[in-house]
Image (cartoon, rainbow, N blue to C red; front, side):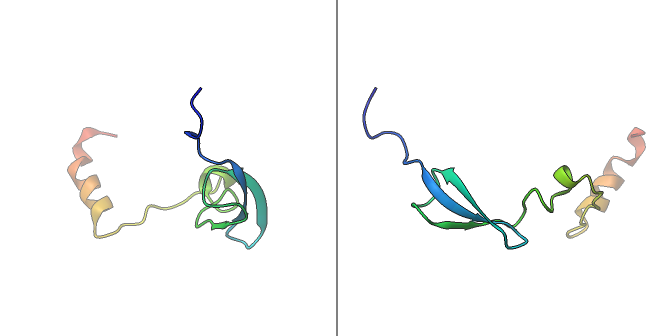
Length: 73
């Protein structure tokens, strides 16, 4: 195997959306850096089981619904 081709694997701090800090191993950043998350398992509907509504940014959702309204989905 060739030397020095793999990224360094070290410990970083991960700051969750509620302010809690976790210590994880990663190749991101440098030893001891802090990664702040915008979305994490404590708030994301995929993990919490909550229902979320689609945000209609610039009418894209309504445009999509109008385009495919006659398909019977």
